[in-house]
Image 1 (tube, rainbow, N blue to C red):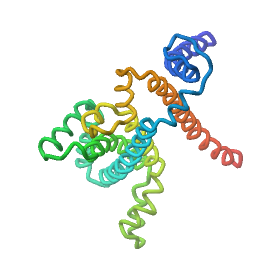
Image 2 (image 1 turned 180 degrees about the vertical axis):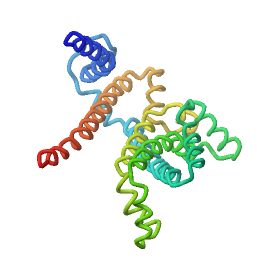
Image 3 (image 1 turned 90 degrees about the horizontal axis):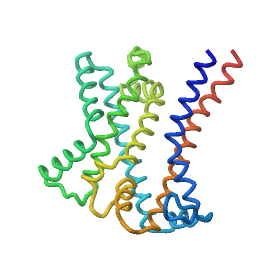
Image 4 (image 1 turned 60 degrees about the vertical axis):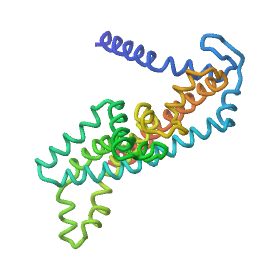
Length: 269
């Protein structure tokens, strides 16, 4: 049993090392003045200074964050309402909506982005210089995942609570706001966080739908790696490190806070 456990720990350690080693190497080099991975330089914070003082970089970061939060908010509203509507629909309708929701999930991002570009720009004649195709593309990308985050919470909820609220005189909107939403809020929050992550990570949809003068972090990084500006490239090492640290802190917080809140209840029991 101990031998089997030791093998499991070893395999898990190797997998984690394979995943995190490149990120950690990049983080180490972000604190040096080296311009090439593999060449050890002196300790320096110049990459971080460049990251937060270059107008081009800060504008790109702020624009990406605004796009991610805005599209995630729209996706959360649509995905949550879609899940609630499907949950309280007939079985055939619920099954049909579930299947329709799976299509954007399994579909390749490049197909989604190209299709939205053709539909809005070519068919409807919408200008690509607007942000509408980009926002719609990210909402289409994220909303199905919000649906998948909210639906399990609805299935865990007692379906009679909503009907009981209506019988006691609540309007449908009031019952939804005061009875259903509190029960599924954890799924809504998880869906919103996932939608933000998907938007930040997207490259293909943004490439086909974004205005020519706008760049997300993903599209900017790809274009920058093809260029010759060494100072910008090394500043992106610092950006990658900042993103990794923020994601790590958010992940630790989201796991530690619920665990901390559950302990008093267990001790009282």
